[in-house]
Image (cartoon, rainbow, N blue to C red; front, top):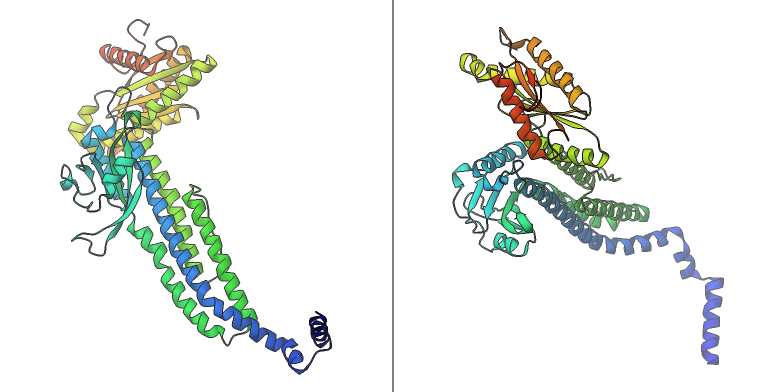
Length: 446
């Protein structure tokens, strides 16, 4: 033990007093060289980890985006078309129209299949009714068995290099799985994962140059890359968790900067596509008003509020008089012009919290947060506004009138079905009594 103690004491004295070798190593240059050599040996490993993390983060983010859009589509097609009406997936013509609109707006292939893998709607209308053949590994069938979304690569004669597809279940009544939505997201996947090719080349060059570069350069390079990769990974995880407002900023101006820009572009597209899907599901493209589905949903919401607060709510049902004659005489474009200009006239007469919708054809609906007396006043104002609105189409100036039925809750009913039925009766009464007028239901004064 005494010999060991003497050896340790001598080593401590040598370290304290120094020597030629220790003096040489203590200089800044050798320290930097030694440290950089150590860092340089780690650079290839860091590069591989970085590339793998970037590729995985891009793949996860692309899959999450595809799955989220597909879930939104699946949610839309199981919603009823209206009170007491079937769901969209049960009306194949409306389902095909919806899928066709999505394909045109999003630029992606979309398919809806039933439990038997029969195609209910497809971006290519000719495939409707055929059996799905592009499921050799049974991914879609497995999704419909266990309800777990799956992403897979689909290959065929039309796309030998493969396309990326995500399948999510479609749940009907009582949460039962009735089919699946298949959404292609290849462009997003390749855009994010393809950016890693440039990163691989940059890492190889950095590893070669790192043996001769300064320690600080190597350290800053490694630190900056890992820092930016971690930022990208955290941002991808947040995006996968549903935070569509996440954006990432990195210090790199090269490949990592381009990857960050691609990530931010993808996140922005997700927000825009979700807004587009919401707009497609709730608004009428011709007039900009709400559509029938949105009107019925808002009516249910406002009725719940009215019952809870004991407040009044009125429903106006409007129908343009002799609208068919405009279509027949001047064409459907003139009819479209009439509808859009009448919609603008209606909207100008309403308050910010009132709700106007085009229910289909030449029929409109309005929700007013007021009782029967003021509802009749507003209806009369709407009738007069439409009557004095000149309908301009090309060089023509036409005129049109509107018949309006008015009902109020709770006087004429306390459910949406009852109010809508009574509103239709009131509208029919206005039509029967000569048009261009406002009427209540048959048991109410005109």
